[in-house]
Each structure stands twice: as C-alpha cells, then as structure tokens.
Image (cartoon, helix red, strand yellow):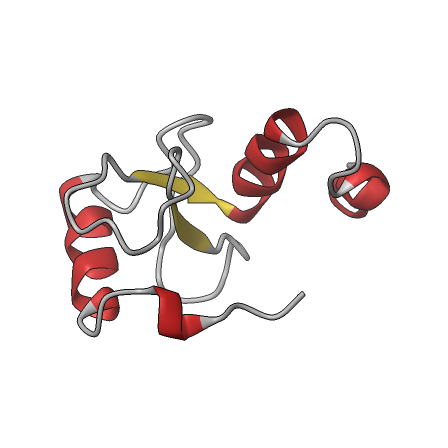
Length: 90
C-alpha cells in the first residue's frame, strides 16, 4: 500500500534526516550501518511506534528496512504483512 504523505508533517524529510543523524545512520535494532554509498544495500527508515505519523513529538525509531518490516509484522501479527518477511530471508 502506498504511503499517504498527507498524513505526515510538511517538514517530514527534515525530521527524518535529523532522526537518522541523531542515530548515527545505524539501525537502532540490529545495528547495521547505512554507508550512504549504496554498497551495502541498507536502507534506513524512520518508524513511528505509536503509528501516529502526524505527531511531531513522537518517539521515532531509526530502522533498516528489514527491522522496520519486522516491527510492523510483530505489531500486526494477524492480518498484517505476513509472508513479506520471506523477501528478506538470507
């Protein structure tokens, strides 16, 4: 399902970049590092544990794509993303 960016603050890109800067561009769950040069394939995302994307004061969590997907899988175990985690199996 595509992201509805209208639910996010207008300066979301700045908020997300600051969160990633504060986290040192490392996933806060597994510790994988985003090198920025594309050589390790790590994409960092910013997760809203409270699911309120409009909340400017939310505790944000910087996660790699794999951990972000896993976070939503656990939160939505039944009727959620389900088998999509298989896309990231090693």
